[in-house]
Image 1: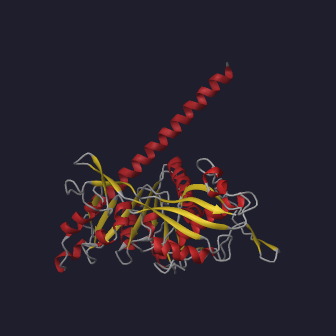
Image 2: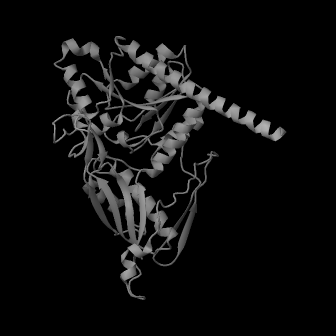
Length: 316
Length: 113
């Protein structure tokens, strides 16, 4: 387990799935020459985005020390890999994004420290928009399905992903969630990430925007302390603004710090509880939905034109 | 941050390549980690040692190449060295600097036998 953040693998649970593993065959070779093979089987019959991780660039065996070694001496040689460590996650994320775009779905990934009011903000956002657009929600937490239950109480479908020891959602988990939730075309897809201002920054889930939520009960210097997250996000909500009169919190300074880390950040001051400032945030979402819908219409039109063109050629 | 997942990602790439090359053992793993990436090299080394245990990369040396940070200063219209993601431009002192280099986290190469 990671000493920095407690990350671990193999403990992810998606609500309703008791055991979650994939149809992989694992072979282990042992020192004594025996080889064990463990087939794991399970019920997911989805395509598993099996992508070849081909080696980018050339394999240049001559570049390594092997060339310098005499035959029969050491067999060691260098092999170029030149791949991003997050390549696998990014491939899944790309597939998710393409999936959203084809269907005109607008996807947001909400990130913040625990206790910034993400879930309350989501509930209020859903209540305001559910009459206008179909909404589905993915909730990420280490344990419990409390948040998904809070979302379901608003009447929209929600799926809880428990990451176990994991500290963030990854694009593969979200891909599974999409298969389960099957969000409607031209709908709003909201992902509430695990409450953590560090790790979720590096993991693209295929969302269109990362929305960072900072509450006024935290420090103004949070964006400077956790710059990765505020740099990865393109929208920031300064939440709990109804409490400003009771706090020694300089909202302008908080915004200035956030813009120092990320000059392009769009910032909304809101209070999910009182509803102040929510209108601007909601119209930002609606504008995003419209853009996504437009993109889809373009794709559909382009495809229709292509079909018409092919049919015309066929008739010739 | 999440060095454990990253270490697992590294191991996956290393094992895939080593297996394809018919290697028996991985001796060295060379990574390129940018100064502006969100990776703590020491934590990554620690985690890699842990996840590589019992695999063909068990005991492999992890070499981390530091890639210096660079940014584009909008005011100066120039590429400038950058120490921190939210650092100021060393020429004009402004904050309008976008990181352009030193954010990479890559597995560069491995030595196998």
